[in-house]
Structures are given as structure tokens and as C-alpha cells.
Amino acid sequence: MKAKRISNLIPGLVSAVSAKTGLGRQPDAESGSQDIQGGNAPKIVVSRRLSVNLVMMIYFVSGMCSLIDEVVWVRLLKLTLGNTIYASSIVVSIFMGGLALGALIMGRYCDRIRARLRLYAFLESLVTIFALSVPLMLRLADGVYVWFYRTCHPAHTQLLIVQAIISGAILLVPSMLMGSTLPLLGRFVTAMEKEAGHLVGRLYTLNTFGAAIGCFLAGFILIRSLGVMGTLYTAAFLNLLVALAGWLLSFFSRLEIEEQTEARIETRPELDSAQAVDGNFYLLMVAFFSSGLISIGYELLWMRSIIHLLGGSTYVFSAVLTVYLLGNMIGAAIGSGLVKTVKIPATGFAVTLFLLGLCGIFYLPQLILWTSDVLPDVRSNTEWLGILIPFSKPMIIPLVQSMFLFLIPTVIMGIGFPIALQAWADHVHKVGRSTGTAYAANTIGEY
Image 1 (cartoon, rainbow, N blue to C red):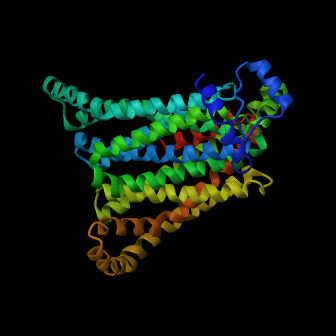
Image 2 (cartoon, one colour):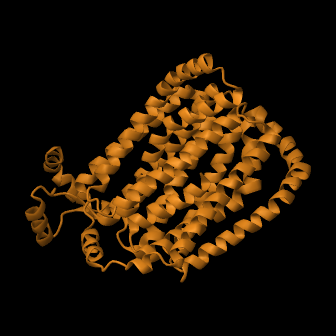
């Protein structure tokens, strides 16, 4: 009802700018059919192209909020566990596991969901609520730790295990909600399996770019300026704006091709069981899992090596994660363009895995070169910048070192995702399920 009142107030404004913005009125025949079928279709609609672009902008901000939350969670868990390595390991593991589980669950149902944007807005609202409640739940958990210690007198390792389990349970639900959004919006932006790698790859690219910016802002600027809780409230406010934008867009977005494509998909004969579980199915699953396992193995190796050289501060964690996400974003953008030209996506994905293996072989010589020749020069050349900008010194060296050591392999990881997604979509023939399952298999490997 609210959407109807808004649409009645601004028809003149919308008609004046419709040619440039993509807003316009539906053709009479189509509008009439929708009015008959739905009974409450809005008069003002947003074109398919503009809808997709707006959704990608919304998901960019969502990615930024997600990584701000993750960096804040690391800081909060550090107060509980007393160690940055333990805190970062728990947060990254639970975050990845939650993303995988959420994507897997949503991937099974998003092909049948109609009101996808409204569900997305609801999920983002839940993310905001759970993210804001994390500090309170962690404080309540501190009382449980004290009771457990006084009652059971556990060893340090036993207490750490209990703390990790309870903290992980607290962070699992918001992580699952975040993970469920990719297959949901991936199904929204494209219903055509041949476009899955390209369009969902673009969606993943913008989300990862937002995540990299959010990680950088939280680790180097927001926490220093606003504090931990101020940073958390900022992310919550942006997340509410994301939910509101998705909810409003759901009233005015009409993807003309989507309904026709859904009809074609619904009438497509299902694959028989033998084809659905052939060797290629399991081979792709193993490849996606291995890709995630290699990716997180590299990330942990990079984290350990850089902490050994620079220490375990939040700046170092943020630098590693920022460069990791930035490289994935660049690679996903490249892969989204390449996927249209790759005739056999599975072969292209195999090439990226081969290149990742080569990066692992050359990492140790590259690390030795950095520590012996490059790092001393970087330290001497950045002294003047630290004098001009007092707070810049702790962030420059971790960022430069991270880019030198592992920007290239993270770009290769990013290239592989849209190509792998297209390979899976060609096999499964369901966009939402393909996105959810492929993303889940890759992320479970990371977990």
C-alpha cells in the first residue's frame, strides 16, 4: 500500500527522467496482464538493466558491512581469548563455515522463491540485529567461562576449546545469513544458465570489492577514529540502508525476461538421475573443494609468515585480508569477462588451479627475496611518509608486503570463481543451485 501511495505522488517526475534512468511504464498489454494476475502491480517499474545495476550497488555496500563486522569480531574475540592469532583463526573459520552453510541452504530453494529482493531485505535486517547483539552475547559468554573455570578447573587448552566453541556458535548465525545472500541475488540478476558465470561473477566482484574497502576502513581508519562499538554501529546503519534499498526496489523492479525465462526453466525436462550424479559432477565438486582448501591454506600461510615478520596487530590482519579480497575482486572482474570466451569452463578452471600451484612453489623464494633485499629498502623509504602522516606508518609496510607476496595468487583465485561457477551451471542447469553449491563447496574447503 505504501508503494502505491509513493507511485501516485511521483509519476510526473519519473516520466521526465525515465529515458536516462531506466524507469518507465510497462507496455499496456503486459501491464494489463500483470494487473489481472497480481492485482496490485505498481504503475512505475524499473527496467531489467537498472534493476541489476542497483542490486549490484546494494551488494557492494553489503560486502563492505560484512567485512567491517568481521574485523570488529576479531577485536572483540581478542579481548576474550587474549591472542590475535586465535581470535582471527576462529573468526575466519566460523565466517567461512557460515558462508558455506548459508549458501548451500539458500541454493536449494532460491530457484523457487519469487519475492527474492524482499527476502534479501529481511535477511540483511537479521544480519544487522545479530551483528549488534554479538558484543552482548560475548559478554554473557564471559560469565559462562568464569563459571566453567571455577567449577571444572580446566587446563588452558580445555578452556580455549570451550571459548572457541561458544564464540563460534555466536558468530555462526550472522555468517550463515551473509552467505545465503549470494545465491539469492545471483538468481535474481540472471535466470539464464549461460549468463551465470558472467553476471554472478560481476555480483561477486562488487561484493568482494566492497569487502576489501570495508576491511581497510575498519582496520585502519574506523576503529582508530570511532572505536570498536562506533565502528559496529556504523556498519549496522549501512546494513539497514541496504535492507531498506532492497525492500523498496522489490516494489518497483520488474525483470521482463525473468518471468519468460522462469517459464522456460520450469518446463525444461529435468536431468535424469544418472546424468545428475555422473563422474563430472563429483570431479567438479572435488575441484571446488580443493580450490577452497588451497585458498585458505595460502591465506593462513601468508598470515603466519607476515606475523612472524611484523607482529600480530590488527593492522597486519587487516592488511592481509584487504589484499586477499582486493586480489579476489580484480580476478573475479577478469574472470567475469573471460568466461564468455572460454569454450570449456571446466578446463579454464583447471588452468587457474595449475597456476595457483606454481605460485605456491615460488612463494618461499619470493619470501626470502622480500626479507633479504626488499623489506629493508621499504622500511627506509617509508620513514618520511610516517613523519608526514603520523598514523600511516603501521599500515604501509603490511600493505606493501602483502601486495608483493600474494597479490598475484589472489588474482588467480578470483579469476577461477566465475569460470568455475559457469562450469557448474552448465552441468546442473539451475542458476541459484549452481551458485549456492559451487560457493559452498569452495568455502567448505576454506573452512
